[in-house]
Length: 177
Image (cartoon, rainbow, N blue to C red; front, side):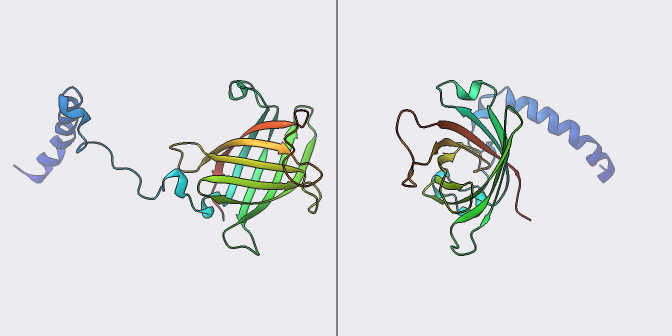
């Protein structure tokens, strides 16, 4: 058998073998399962570097059905290594509400034990928002979901019933440059 002939029938053989395996009890065999991505750590062990880059932002008024409704605010978040704290991030938020009004803010925060925390400041000095979230399971930290609260005058999250609360989702657009 020539090597040309072997190469010509290999794709046919591969599809036939695949068809046989899919219809067989061996299809669920762990030996045939795809290897997990070794570059993707478990959600609780995601290093802060995974936050670096550009993210699309969607957020909704707080409700149990928020992710099924159109987002009330969309925007972009850019995060990079904090210049003073090696295991923290710093960045910028640009968001646009339904009326088209654009707001910008400075962000700083951490990713510790799988919990994503950010402080938001509209003027770069006074905290105006507090973000907490976690990586979406199985997303390799390329999607984050959580809650954003209006900051109280003390700088902590304002947990009062009348304080605005939002659910957010960040999806990685591109890695850092």
